[in-house]
Length: 181
Length: 181
DNA sequence: TATTGTTTTCAAAACCTATTGAAAGGAATA
DNA sequence: TATTCCTTTCAATAGGTTTTGAAAACAATA
Image (cartoon, rainbow over all chains, first blue to last red; front, side, top):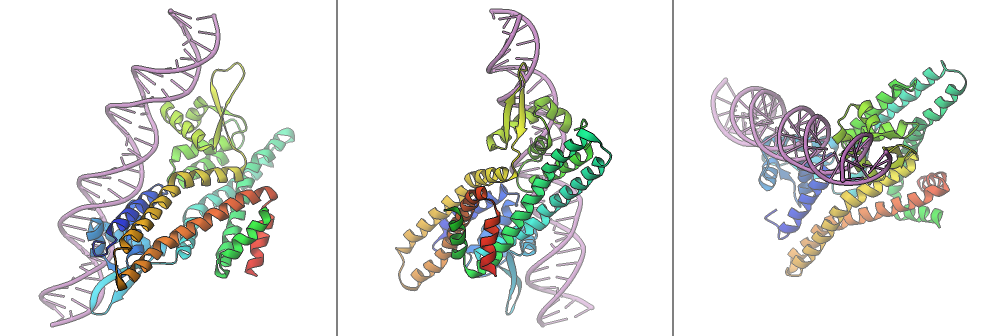
């Protein structure tokens, strides 16, 4: 962003945003592009991204597409220009909701389904057992039940939160605050 | 866990747990060891881990230590045995709290501090500007302010949640439910 | 102190994921 | 249709992380 007077703040933020993402299983470049677009005051095209972050056309293309698929950036167009431009979602809460929803769908749902299957497998085995061994099965099964219940509660909390957000976040913290006192 | 009658459920769960962790920036083996210990009905030693997951002594040592540092597993000892044994935290909510706390400390705090610095940098630059350019600075700065506010709220929510957990989670969902209706 | 059992370390190797760059594919314009 | 401009694709490569395995360090016992 050498055009703005805030080049150094941009550079700093983009770099750290990428580093953080990398430790959360999201590619550094993808996160850097996202940060670049989040800070930009106008839509940028592929060449802008290539220039500013010094990445190849291939990488820019792949990562921009991934970001569009995630729903974190949008494609836009400009009159009289064939190029595609991109701009980032600016509402931080919307961004958060999108990320959580996508990661749940892609990465949490598979493990939940697996645990449900494990649950069923144990039930099946259990039916073949007798006496104490059968009791052990219940203790063992609890480990799976616990995780499933946990996922369920988190799920509910998140759904409520994203609904409640529309009513502003103040009331949420207030409501929770009362429970603790 | 070839000793239990539930070998196949174990295997399945351990594998998927590892895969999920990998896509969240946590090493597959570390997560697999964690899953193995979470399911185990008695503490296991390094050799147990090596045998059951087919990993080298070095890898077992490194990953067990990392898990202890995270606070997800505990070292234990057995009378008349020099070996160290390990067992996993069994309370899923405690596990969650530990993970969130650690990741916040290690990976979220650094970016928050960076954003605060960016904020300050912009203020400094802004003081040198005049007129419209100065107004632009405010619009630009908002991007950073938004993220900081977001982090703050999430932080508060999480703190409340981990306190409220002791009083049961029912009241939380109830309180949030009221806001939505 | 020497012996033995156990854990840690770390350079080399294996493994995995992301990037590059050039070529192919598309789509708008003349 | 030919040309031009832009985007996508993908095999090769670069870059980064994890694991291995053997040696060193450590600690308990005799």
